[in-house]
Length: 424
Image (spheres, rainbow, N blue to C red):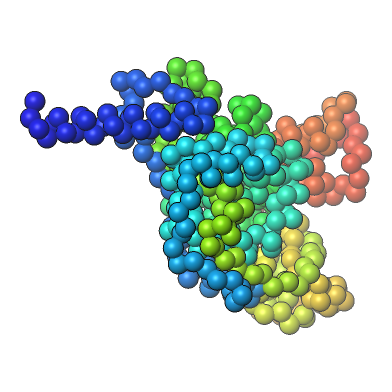
């Protein structure tokens, strides 16, 4: 055996030994087998942790509502903190999701408090704009509130984030999973960018994953790579049922996903101890919503209320063009309160203003074709004893959607009646 081969074998042995020791610090163990290699212990940091902070600060919400805290002195170097101190801090977090300490978690913490510390500074400023929406949805589905930090891992709270894998929005839904939870996608709209709809879908999805695995760490992992990959990793591990036991058998990105989530929880709590200055959010105007049930163009909205086009698009990122296709499904329009009244006072004039120029026959045909061909529905005949809640759970949607799709004014339904269930 030559010296190069001998050195390589010793290096791999040391890596495996150090990795195994790190597990003992968190009451988490795995048994080394021939199938575990040095490569299977490597992990990737989330794509969002590598975002260019300068590009994030050019986003409309950040540019208008975030500013640097001039009274905060940010350290240029992340102070050295011992393993024991970080372990104690993690154990003090009031969370339901387990937050163990080991070398992988330490690596992720060092990343978010070091190289990616500006992402944490940015997230501290942006989160207040969305936190109430996140928390309300998580509570609704009985999901641990600390998962409000998951969109930081997923997208760094970038409203129109789009990953290399085709996942979209702050909660990063791929097309098929979004469709399962009632998020429509076509050429005119993408509900994955609607913060209220996508947050509700994400909380519902996380709850379903927990019900499947009975463990929040596995549910979070399955959110990243899909339940099939988690189940496969459990099988390959010999039937193990905890994240750290199946770690070597998970996809490389997923191995870094839960540690990143733990690290973000840590960094968002102990940022001061690492010399991170949060960006300060100015108080945004109070927003309100109106339901649009006819086709509406952005220029019609601007004409009657005078809102800036960039603000209009920033508040309604789910609409991919200047058209809100309300004639085909109820569409929600979000605006600052002062712009709502002029639109309501406009009445039908809102929809008829310049309509012949804005909605030509060819344009209307395009809208009809795109919406009718892409958004379909099935029907459900109500059985005795069923409620809107039980029907919503069956079709992975919400009571609010069922009521909107079927023009229901209350939760009361009768056996024998038929409901429309939209597939997209």
